[in-house]
Amino acid sequence: MTVTLNPDPQVAVRPLTKTEKVMSRAMLAAWSAPQFNIVVDIDMQHALGQRRPGVTVTDIILSACAKALIQFPAMNAHFRDDAVHEYAVANVGLAVASPRGLTVPVIHGADGLSLDGIAERRKALVEKVRTGSISVSEVVGGTFTVSNLGMFDVRQFTAILNPPQVGILAVGSTRTIQVWNDGAPEWRPISAFSLTCDHRAVDGALAARFLGVVKDILEGCTT
Image (cartoon, rainbow, N blue to C red):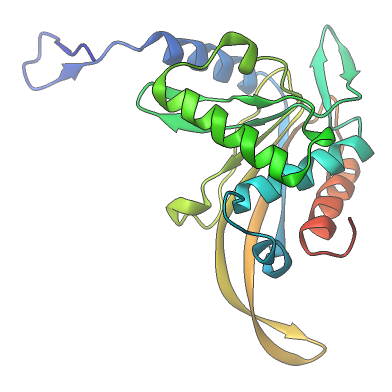
């Protein structure tokens, strides 16, 4: 990493890397879109029970999103040239931080993969990001993005769109919270899921229905 000094000797100037420059341009494009976000609390008890060696909570969330996206093609879409381009295959991106900056590798055809298949592909892509060996073909073509900061003990956050995608899901940490179960207090593992959408392509009702299906899948109410 190159660090230079500007005329003020107490200030170090670090030029952006190529990756950071690309991300900067993407974020500028994102802010030009009218965005809104909705948040739901999800009981993660069922999802946590699906963990096993090699399969993480992130994999379970990616799988749930892939299934829901096929049910809601308007969410599995790009907005460009004043039109919504809906896709029949869910290519789900995962935001990954590395010393080289934020990268979003894509699990192509995630809806056609088993949970173990998603886990295997996610692990391979994350390793490539962290070693700097990720290829261009593995970071393009995403139709939706998931950003999970739960491992950093972040309770809730709002993610910025990844243009031209029309939706991105931000996942917070799972916390043990007391809830009411038919009038009786009960401690449950709850996580806040925040969905950011491009309002030019998605309205609030559609976003709520989509997030509701993700919630039902993760809570084991539907497959």
